[in-house]
Amino acid sequence: MAAQLPSTEIPLFPLNTVLFPGGQLQLRIFEPRYLDLVRECTRTGSSFGVCQILEGHEAGAPATPAAVGTLARIVDFSYREDGLLGITTEGGSRFRVVRTRVRSDGLLRGEVEPWLDEETQQVPVEFALLQTILERLIETIGPQWRNAERSLYDDASWLGFRLAELLPLAGEEQQQLLEMIDPLQRLAAVRDILPRFQKA
Image 1 (spheres, helix red, strand yellow):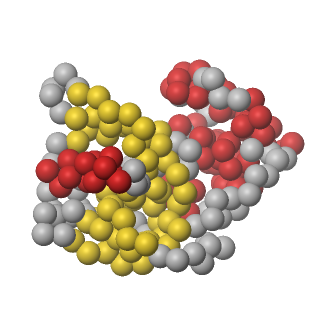
Image 2 (tube, rainbow, N blue to C red):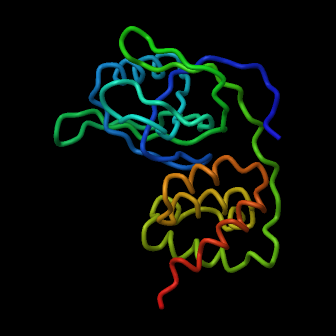
Image 3 (cartoon, rainbow, N blue to C red):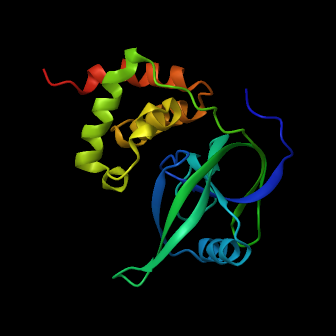
């Protein structure tokens, strides 16, 4: 179950994507409200929340976020060729949104309840194929993980989250996998999805 920890208020960044714990996400920042968010998090060393958009758009009026999201910590900055600020974030713990409010500048803030991180569970032998599939995915589309320690492939949570972010899944499927609280259940769900990607 989700951990019953004290709630806290954080800035939210609704996106048309899902950030998983331990994952990486690169963002292009141009709206004033999100430039302010980056300044705030940089000044205080705090994280912001990434939630998938349920209704609305990334730019413009505040979007409706999913009820479960992931903390994002800024780990790098760059200025892109188009002159916009680029940031690289790393996914932390998940949280559940209790309520939201919109600041006068349009920035969405949420009162959130943090979840405890999943306990490390060894990947059972029946999911060994998923480890091989992840290795192949990383070789082709996941260069950020090429130097990952081999022991991580034996961690059911890490394996499931990496597969969920690298497989070409629909946003709803990614959100469902994010919200699962049993890492073995997540691996089973990914395994059941795989036949869709097999060549005829």
